Length: 299
Image (cartoon, rainbow, N blue to C red; front, side, top):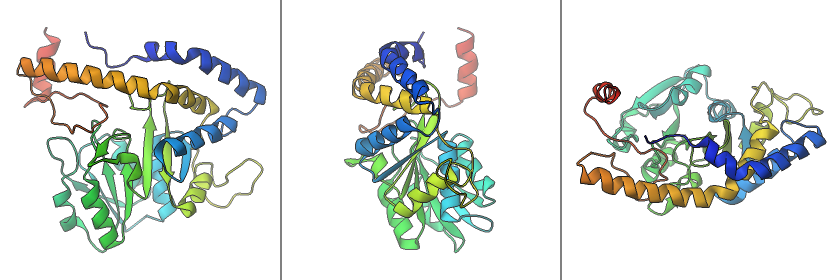
């Protein structure tokens, strides 16, 4: 039986450092948006090469406050993928904008040649979502955003640390939203998110928006916002897993190579993927996935 989650094994590798840092969190007495949040954000800056990193309670919150920061709302249109999890659409509706869907190809990513005909005078942003570990067509999408003056948001929940033509996913987009969970390329022991940007104005807006409109407890309210501040526990988890990231990715690629060979030998069609993907999900292709699921349940 192939297990899709291996939290117990990962925890065993990080638990000593994790417990040590959690003890320090308790001694410091600040359990959210504290010392380790700042440290983890700095590590993300170094890891991704982006100017600013802001931890959030989830990637969904990151996408939502990206809409708020850019002033997108009623009457505006946001171009998004037609195939993803509900979070890839929900944030558009929460700001009362209109989602405009783009179909996907066999890799699960947006067909970039279908985007331009969908752009209208009400279009404000393109949210490019990478799926299964592959990047979207960043060259075309970047050119379209520049041509039409649109906000380019990279929903890199699944595509973080993948590449396309030698360019890393996390370097693309005016705003990048990351997701952390047990099964993500950069895993955590629970769930969380982060926003990356080189736009300093956006950065300060994110700090306020993620905490009900003020960046710190003793500072004044400046704006509306959401409860999106990260727990120190999340920051500690990320600091632990970052230390193991390279080794874990190396092992994932070894397993992927094994799957490629063995499934090919059995004539099982795997999803086409780039050689520069991040191995996030190994997808098998079926004409009817529900029928395939029922057959597997009978084995």
